[in-house]
Amino acid sequence: MSSKIYVGNLPYSVTDSSLKDNFAEFGAVSSAKVMMDRETGNSKGFGFVEMASAELAQAAIAALNGMSVDGRSIVVSLARPREEGGRSGGYSDAGYSASKRSDVGYGTGGHGGGRY
Image (cartoon, rainbow, N blue to C red; front, side, top):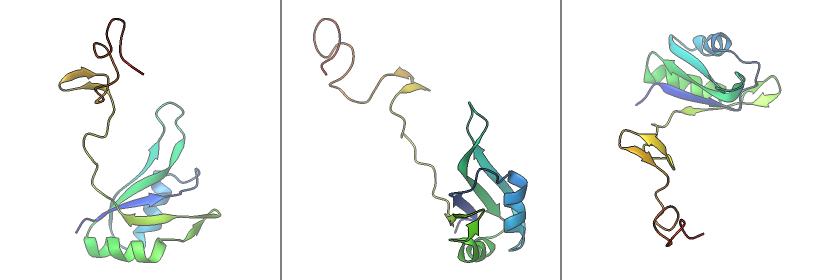
């Protein structure tokens, strides 16, 4: 069982250190990170906490899920593994690809581009 926890619906005032402090009462916290928007630098409203063991993670989830923080009911659950291949286009190891759809793009609809 994983010891990585997803924490959602966080108030934008929550920082990495305050997130870590809130979970530390349940045991040793390996890491705590609030996800930030790259462009604005503001919180995205969710983060991840990694506990020292799966038992500590379960205790924190049971105690904190649904708890009110600055008027917001936070969501606390086990983090799911990141899904691969969710991107719709862009640069990758294989090079640039516009889309996985065969009916849109260059070369599929005759001269001048694809069908819409």
